[in-house]
Amino acid sequence: MTSIYQINSATRIRFARRFLISLSRMRRASTLGPPSDEEIRTRTRRIRIVSYSSMAFAVGSSRAWSRALVLKIRNRARFRGILRNKCLASKKKRVIKRHKVSREMSKTDMLRRLVPGGAGMGICGLLEETAHYMTCLATQVKVMQSIADHYSK
Amino acid sequence: MGGNGDNNDGKAFQNGGQSVINCQSSGMSGNPFFASAWDPVVSMSQHENFGGSSMVSHSEFTNSPYPVVMENQGNSTTSHLVHYPSDSSYAELMPKFPSYGSGSFSEMVCSFGLTECSQVANTGCHLNYSSNKEANVERTITNCVESQEDRQLTEEPIIGATPDGKRRKRVAESNSPFDPNKNAEGERQKDPSGHSSEVQKEQDEKKPRTEQNTAANLRGKQAAKQAKDNSHSGEAPNENYIHVRREKISERMRLLQELVPGCNKITGKAVMLDEIINYVQSLQQQVEFLSMKLATVNPELSHDIERILSKDAALDHDLQSLFQMGFDSSSAIDSLGANGRLKPEL
Image (tube, rainbow over all chains, first blue to last red; front, side, top):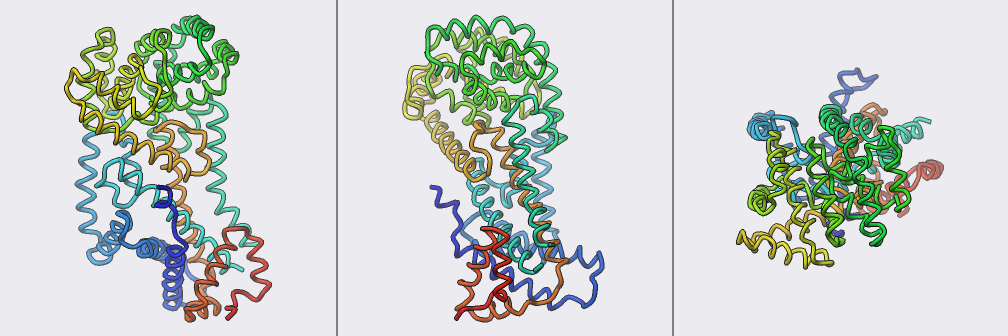
C-alpha cells in the first residue's frame, strides 16, 4: 500500500525535465537588464504555475488531484477563471452553510481546499490523494531547490 | 554564500514546523499557544470554548479521579491506563492540570506510568474542543472502573471524528439504550455548531464501545461486537460497512503519519489532520518561495542545462546526479561546481 505514495524516480525526472524546459523558455522570453518588481512578481507567478503544471503532467492522469490540477490550469488559461470561480463559489457556499455557526471551516474542508480536486471526494479518497499530493509536493520542492541552488552558484 | 543562505531559508519552514511539533509533544501547556500560532482564527475560538468549561470541570473532579485510578491500579495492569485517557473528556482534564498549576494529579499519574497516559492523553485532548465534558467524565470513570477494557480503545481517537452522514444516523439509534447518558447527550446536542456536534457524536459512539467491550482483537471482533450491540437497530451490514470505512481511514491516516515528518508520536485524527494541513501549507509556501527565487536569479541560460536538455541520453543520468546531490547535502553542490558543472559524461 505504501508503494502508492512513493514517487518513482521516473516521475521526478519527468517533472524536472518539463520544468527545466519551461524555465528555459521563460528565460528566453524575458527582457534584459535588471527586472522590476512587477516583472519579478509576474515571473514568480508564472514559475509557480509552471512548476505545478509540470508536476501534474509528470504524474499524469493516474491521480485525481493531477487531473483536477491540469483541468484547473487549462481552464484558467482559456477562460480566465470564469468556470473555476463558478464551480468554487457554489461549493464554497455549500460548505459555509453547513459549518456556519461556530467554525468557519473544519479540518477536512481545509484539506479539501489545499489538495486540488479535493472538493469532490469523500474522506477516504481525500486522504489518499493527500498522501500522494504531499509526496509529489515534496519532490517538487526538492527539485526546485536543487535547481535554484545550481543556478545561484 | 547565497546558495547556503537560501538553503537555510528553504529549510526554515521545515525547522519551524519541527520546532513547533516538538513544542507540542513536549508539554501540553504549550498547546493552546501552538495552535494559535498556526491558525489563529480556528484555534483561538477552540481554545476559548475549551478553557471556559474545563476550569469548572477540573476543580470538581480533582478528587474523584484519584481513588478511581488508585483502585484500578491495584487490581489491573498499567495497560488499563491506556484506556482511561482514551476517553477524550477524561484525557482533557489531564493536560489542563499542569497548565493550571495543580500538579497533584500529574504526580499521581506519574506513579502509574506517565508516558503512556500522556501520550494517549495528548491525543484525546487534541481531539475534543467541545465544551460539555462533565457528564462524559462521570460516565467514563464508572466505565473504567467496571469494564475490562481492551486495546481497541487506543484506536478510538484515530477512528473518531469523521463527518460522515452514516455515523450520525447510527448515533441517533444508539442513543436510546443509554438512559443515564441521556441528559448529557441532550446537553451536548444542544450545541448548535456543526463540527463540534460531529465531535460529540464521535464521543457518543465511543460510549457504546467503552461499556460493552468483550473482545481483545481490534478489527475482526470489533466488527462482530458492533454488529451484536446494535442488532437491536437491525443494521448489522451497515455497521460492517462503516467499520471497513473506518479501517480504511485509519490506515490512510497511519500512512500519512509516516509521510509527514515528525509525526511518529501523534495518535489522534484531529492532531494528525492539523499536522497534515500545516505540512501541505508549508510545502506550498516553499514552492512559492522557490519560484520567487528562481524568478530573481540571473535569467541567464546556463549552457550545461541546455546541453543536458538537448542530449536525451545524458539527461536522466545527469538529472539524477543533480537531484541526488541536491537531496543529500548542499556541500555536494560545491563539488559539482568544482567539476565544472554538469558535464555529460558520455
